[in-house]
Length: 289
Image (cartoon, rainbow, N blue to C red; front, side, top):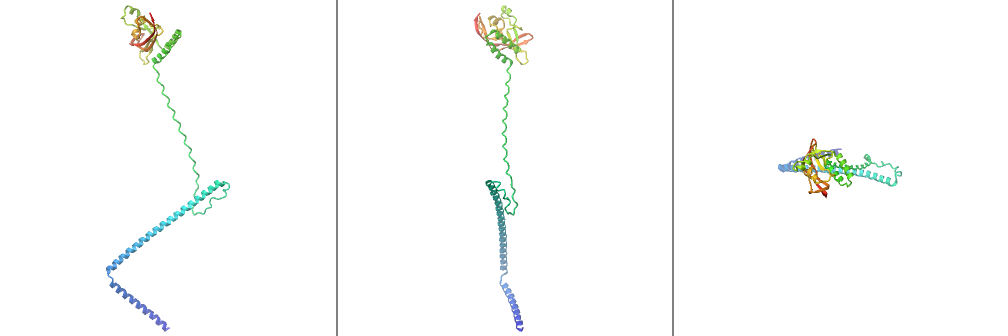
């Protein structure tokens, strides 16, 4: 017992001696170090600690990024695996027949995710009907020819008829169709005694001048000679023909056919007719008087 007590006393004495020596050593070492160097050492240690801390943060960021990428790869792999299984199942159904593959349940894959919804393929849109071609615009009706133009066209057709009776009937019908009027020279005898006397014209039922309205609401008429009368010297000189129409008449000749190149123009005042502009005719079928 005495030996144990001495052992504990020796241990305490050794510990107190070690503490005293450590304190004396620290004071001696601090007295030897320059305070400025100690401050620099502290600054260097602080910078190293900051670098270590920054590196630690960067390491944490890299580890976080790697974890996220790993999770993303896992998700993509699972989704691809599920889609592949569905495609294989669909292929088997097409190859083996729907009845043989109907027993297999589609939900046989353990997955932490909800099964992806299946979408029916959208029906192809029906082709739009081709637009109907626009109807071609109807051609505008040609403006109706003036009455005198239509009258002269019909006149030339009837004038070529060789049968006198048929020609006379057709000319009468033509005058009735165009509401034609007739007039004649009323003073041929007076002009025989006085060739310088001007001709006078008046409406007559059997006149040898035919008149068709100009069509503008005025009292002017287009005038042509009756082609059924021979064109003789008396008719040319005394019946007003030379004043109404320029022609190729030769003195002493009689002509049985005429063609109209231009109608004359007269104005009607009551029953009297006054020449306004001469026309032109071409005579043929000449005979000696």
